[in-house]
Length: 58
Image 1 (cartoon, rainbow, N blue to C red):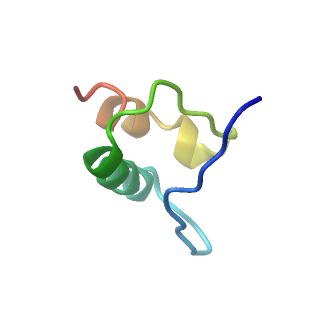
Image 2: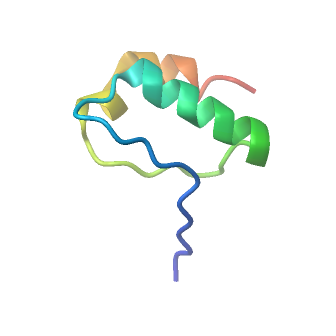
């Protein structure tokens, strides 16, 4: 079984990868870096900005 927890809700007509990064950074600051991050293939999640911005930080 996979436990799911919603840590943030961002509502808008469009979310940039930079906005997703800011939200993830805030969550990581509060809760620590996740072992696994799952997402759909939306452009804001497949962007190189996201890969470089959040997942490479220690």
